[in-house]
Amino acid sequence: MSEADNAWRIEVDGVEHDVDVDVSAMTGKIVVRLDGKVLEEDRIWFSDKEIRFPIGGHEVQVEVDLAYAGFSTRSALRLDGRHVEPLRR
Image (cartoon, rainbow, N blue to C red; front, side):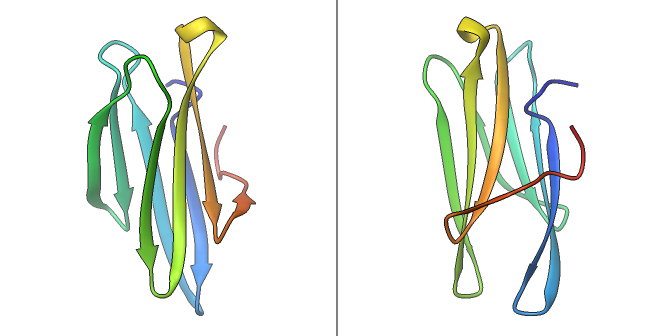
């Protein structure tokens, strides 16, 4: 598991949603899931990745960035611009 592998449970308009981010350290492949469904599959190579998607009238922003001179990655989630703590670290 990398530092970028994280999960969040967020409440939007009274409904809970699960957001999961998995990043392969070997291939740089990023998979973002919302409530178990894949929303985005991409790769992180030489620059940070930002993935945005709506839930209702709210904006979710997932950031995956390179850390430790590119030897690791980490992720963060913002809901309407506010940082949300992950369930696991």
